[in-house]
Image 1 (cartoon, one colour):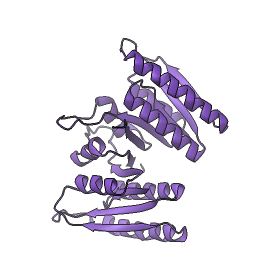
Image 2: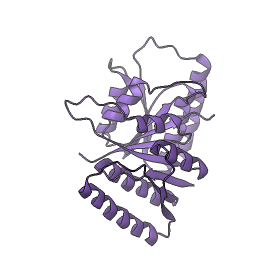
Image 3: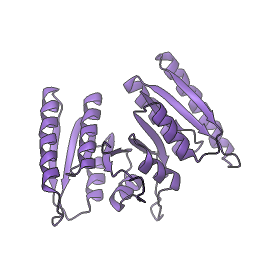
Length: 133
Length: 133
């Protein structure tokens, strides 16, 4: 059993990572962080830095608990959704954790195509998490 | 802390109910099943019957574990999404569990409006579960 989360250095990505780690600790299951890079996508440097710091904090916590965890770099030219779903299937994941953007009070927001695809196509459950307000 | 699930007498609804109960047992948290009826909607009688049977089996399990659980009938004229989100906020829910239909091999499927709304507007995480294949 494992919990699979995508590596996304944004506020939602950090919230998803934190929640995925909490769920791993609760269930005593392995945490797999997928870094699915297609290249060319720019992330805010500060968020990326915060994400790295959060990731090493969480890895320390999992180490202390003796829980297995790994960061997989996938450069397969796939959409991130495909990579997450494939790994979740290989690992018989308990669930996938994804981050969703919070709707602004006036904002019309629809689900991004990656999120929709993961929600619809993953055979395991998907836990969708927002960044804190 | 509580886990909130909508009462939906379909295969996906039963999968969501079962998963919500498992998560309640794991976390020792209350389970709240929301029956948000607007009337007029027909459910397959057999599925409704199976759902009721599943619900009483689960209630028995939660009773044995001494966990609080309740079925709330809400007839407020709201969309089910609004009711689920409102109860989740009142109860500071740990998460909401929803059932999603599985995409057929040839089927183009988009997320239903209730599911999208819950995913986008709930401030707590949302666990999306499919019916077994």
